[in-house]
Image (cartoon, rainbow, N blue to C red; front, side, top):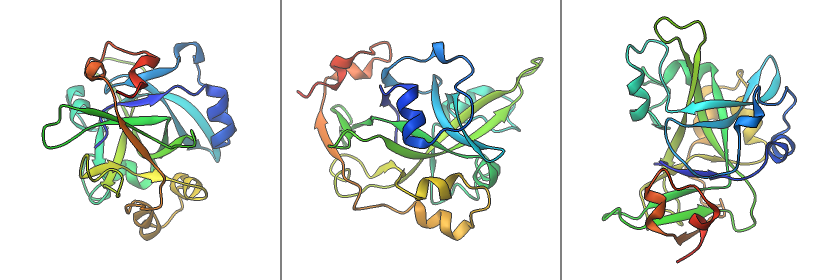
Length: 224
């Protein structure tokens, strides 16, 4: 699974890496480098709108359009890639609202104790393009939609397996465009979500201070 992640890269770098053609985030001043992104917080995602890639701030924790209680978002921060196309909470978004969740890295707590956090990232410092889904929900009495997202997970690869049996779906190269394209066939999308052994990742232990969602500083990335 993925319950915390890091995005310290600037909006400008995200625009360059992911080929953002649409306008900047509506209120880019709301964004700052984040070292301990947690569920129910806002984060930038890449989505395709009218044929152009946009960088927008959405809330992490998907709330289906039919939901009665927004608290469901706390339970839907991740979606299993094997079943997302059929699950009622995700299937509409899987068909037409796929997105990329950029990250510099993510945290995982080593099983079975779950007490020691590790930071997982690319050794070369390149961004991770995690596959996601986004959804819209209208709060009762509101006049503006609440936009939310979830991160897809798959079986762990060789790096992750000693820590956990799941990991985010990481896309590379042309797979990003294929994932965002609303015309992509289901069988091609399913192929993208299989574990990729060739994804180059590094993992090292970090301070348990990351357990506290109020802690958000570069020191959290220091190896112990």
